[in-house]
Length: 178
Image (cartoon, rainbow, N blue to C red; front, side, top):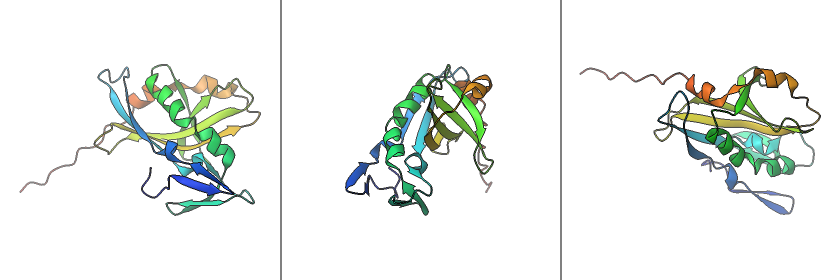
């Protein structure tokens, strides 16, 4: 869990467990890195909250206020497994480039795009500064999109392996000479 994120959240008369959003480190073998990479996966609170829903309990963490969403919380229970599945099969799993509302580039997973309601998972992928991981995958948001027609994205996808292999190497810090 994030140091600032509680393990449970009370909405109405129910307590909702948030420990599945605690993050994990996963190993994967890529074409670009046959010796393997370690991937640190973290989740934002946007995976189980939503903006501007009347009568919802307000969830405040890390200085941000959003409304807790029981539906998004229920969907988020499958997120860690879905992300592990993509990391384990990174040579064949496809991801798609997209932009968020602010114009920032994001990567996206469409889980089972043949269903009426595609499950969108938006994430950032960067080189990690953590000594236990080579790559940091931050799930920024995840939600169902009713009546979405996935045809356009299917042509634009690329393998997760290729995206991870194209990440720039972190710059080594220069030591001062004494």
